[in-house]
Image (cartoon, rainbow, N blue to C red):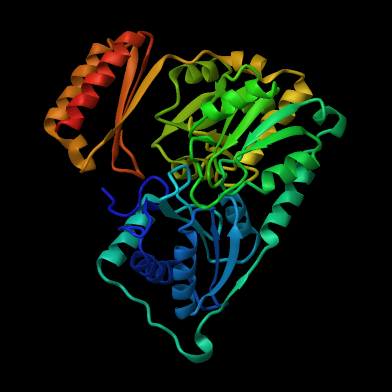
Length: 443
């Protein structure tokens, strides 16, 4: 089990291990050694951040260390993760570093790493970086003219917005007929979302667009869809769109406040793209009813481990065009090798307008199987490997009698064991999850 990396970079409480400036310095040493070649050019590293109060700590710590090792650093400021990923691929950068804890509370922070091709690190690469850090590896600090410099670069947002406007040729007259509520989660999209949706002509109400450093994801955004569900009904909107703190996830609500998670969004995109006899990539968490729907369309669902980097890795080595997670990471291969919540939302909107189907109509594509989930806080996530826990998981799986499935996994970003059950008998699911969660909690 990796000690530093979770399902999406490293993450934890800011100024507490592993999210400390000391760990940042160790990361910089290992990343410079592994990915920064001085042969043809001075290494270039882009750094972006979300709206958390602690982001400046890690932004400046990383920039200072990279410069001391001879790299030039571009500070992109507050930007969504997909803009950083796109910027890295557009310009000759060696690395992109996003300082964000995504959907976590403001007191947490994290580091997401993108290679020069815009992809995240593989498990093997993460293990190698951890090995270098554990071994105390240090690069040599350079002197004189060899040191790097950092400067501000604000072009990323402008370039991204121009690309979006060129990509989506939505008739203004049609857009004006659609009333939206947009929840920016007080995160990275708090400025960009209003600019994009207003420039395309949508009648939009914007909520949670006033970050103060401590209110990111605070009972809002994709991680807390109740806010967008209630807002859609309150403002009598046609649909609602909720992003997470760093803008790489999206959840949608129809005009009744019903929530469309990543499974639904992928199903809509399958219909929009006219896919047939192809692959769609999701994770072990995708609802079985979604898989059945894809089968009815002649499409094979490929399941990976939880984490959008696993989806991206599979897609990179296959013909699959779209993939995503129920949590709202949606990857459209022709756009970026990582999730982009705003782009995915506009794809759904574009199809709804062109097909003249409301989001409520699109919600009828399939009916998900009932599911129950629970997050159990633990001191040590290795409790999941305990023999008693493993035997109990097998016994509870048998109780579902082949009409459901049980998934028990450690969170990649928090000291939590997630228990998830899915099937036709909701009462049985509740009983199984409650008993198993109680067992894990008391181990």
